[in-house]
Amino acid sequence: MKPLRLLLIPILVLSTTSTFADEGSLLTDAQKNYVGFGAIFLMLILFLWAMLATLRAFKVISHILLGPEAIAQANAEKVAVKAAKPKASIVNKLLSLKPLSEEKSLVMDHEYDGIQELNNPTPPWFMYLFYATIVFAVCYIFIYHVAGIGQLQYDEYKTEMAVAAKEKAIYLAKSANKVDESTVKLTTDAATLSSGQSVFKQNCTPCHGEHAQGVVGPNLTDDYWLHGGTIKDVFKTIEYGVSAKGMPSWEKQLSPKQIADVANYVKSLHGTNPANAKEPQGDKMASDDSAAPKKADAKGTVKTAMVVK
Ligand code: HEC
Image (cartoon, rainbow, N blue to C red):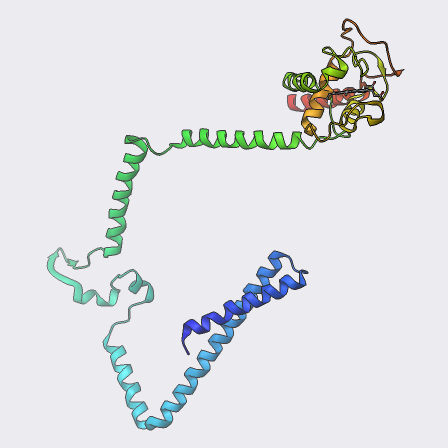
């Protein structure tokens, strides 16, 4: 019985249970782990039990083989050895400390006013620990204060803030791309409008004109809309297009963020009265999103009020 081989058993049990769990796929990963650890624990208990049983069996066999006298003699020897050696506790052994009972053997030939000196030097592990702190301190001073390789608290803080800012930017870019026609918001944010403007210049001017005054497609700056003039309507028209009437769908070419940007840019052109404006098409519609921004405003004031408090 090689212990290594025995150790393999729980590992095998673990792997088989996890494959069964995979097939069943009823268990979550965490549950699979519990099953695995449970199996290992059970195996270890069985293993321990088997070892104890074997030990008992060996004891019985040795009693039978050696006979009662030999056993009694061996026990007596054991007791004698134990009695001769003063007991060192496990803690004392581990820390290589001398127990109080050994004090007499440590007394040195040096006494003053009835105070005796013992030959009981600091254990080596403690000294090594002490030397290690010195080495650590020298390295620390060199790395952080002399060579300047390591970052002190403030620099470390700045680095972590920079990393966080990068992650935040990535997160915001991702979440900006999650926008759709039901979540798009009207904004006059300069970055959004300039991004929208460049999208418009690249894709929309041939049909809607340099200033959205209308060419093949309708004038996008007036009060008249064929498909609705709120930000959500405009987003929807741009995303899905009106293929029957020659307005392409931009779902594939533009990212959701780009569509939101260009929709906001179109909205920002409202009322600019460009030259050579095309005649109105569609119905005069409320295009000012009045409901939505007012709500946002109300929310904004509530928020600031809370902040002021
Ligand atoms: C191939 C020409 C063409 C291009 C390119 C084009 N459009 Fe259009 N667009 C049209 C036409 C035609 C209509 C009118 C559809 C209709 O009659 O229903 C239209 C309608 C629209 C409307 C709805 C207007 C309304 O009155 O409801 C919006 C908004 C719009 N386009 C925005 C854009 C944007 C933004 C782009 C660039 C990403 C773009 N269009 C690119 C041809 C085009």
